[in-house]
Length: 475
Image 1 (tube, rainbow, N blue to C red):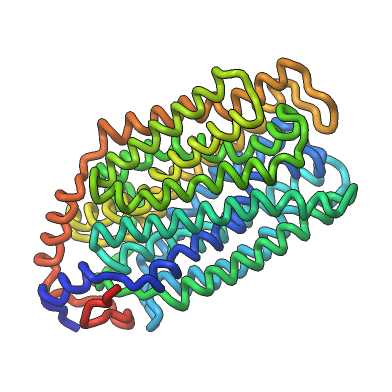
Image 2 (image 1 turned 60 degrees about the horizontal axis):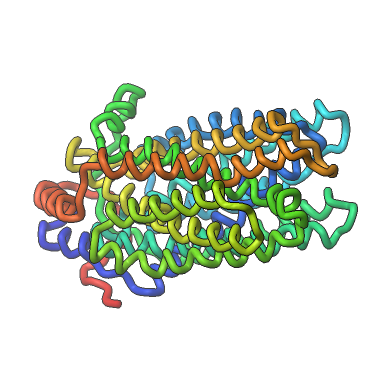
């Protein structure tokens, strides 16, 4: 099936409907209903219910996330080198099927045999590693999906905005609802955690179903059936400077973001004195992210994606630094935390558009379009960052002398405060510097690259079975 340069440009510049943008954002809403539970509450479950010491629980996050990081390239390679592509495209069928299995495993991660500590630890490792494998086969195709929906830079920025809205909405809902559900079961927290995880996982699958049903894969992809070697895999990554910069940046930005969400339950319980404050602090601070999300499309049009992300890093780093230096009060802490969430919402959302641009850059540079591999390589850095955050939280709690269900010492409280806002302030500032000085693609340069790809790919044979439109879809 030949595709002309004109039709390819039409496809690449297609304007997505509002329904399709919302449907795409629903994917990260569903993703968050399962992923955010592990980042925000699983450490608390391990230390306070499963009875694991902080350092031991941190080891679960550290080692399983490194294991998960290597699963992403395998998932990406599997997706990119499949021969049989159905009428629903390369990404959506795998994403939907994997999300169902992921939901089941989400429930199992919030379960403990309640036996000897070593048995509980083995179960924690096995269940969370299995969860990570299914997460890779859910998240890699979802992240890759945006790159084949459109190649228009503005449309991708809007998709990133909707994705970030879904992510923040999930964090907001789980942040407000999860612990009250657990606390509703009184002393039976084992059952409370399992029920809360089950309800969230069910919503997650429903959201992924919406994404699979109402999005379309329309950017044609040249056939590539060659066996991908490890050497070729690393060459694909090494020749993509924008991707390498995003990987380095993400190690700092995501570790800061995840440490913030992991420590807030400890901070409210011990530093602010009442864990029942958590839903209110989360509702205000995470809810404030909507300001960043709503301003993202306008900011990217005015100053571009890269500068908007740098601005967000700066706002978040300053807010966290002030929270570290100023005397702590519930109101001032919540206000500054809200500013940090507003700031970090900008780069967290725009990053997904930058990854899609990096996919185009790799296609332009090497002549091979490998969405799954490129996205999985980026996701590798996210997993490493998550392992750093989980390990830092767990080992940090042990280092500062944390013990559950007792009053904490002044030294322990100071340590909780640094983990909550000190490390994030430093890491977010470094992420902004890395992006500002090393990332090479402007919006204008990406548009030039996309045009060159369209011209070069004219007349090639493309994968059959994709639902490529012949006319643009209007808003």
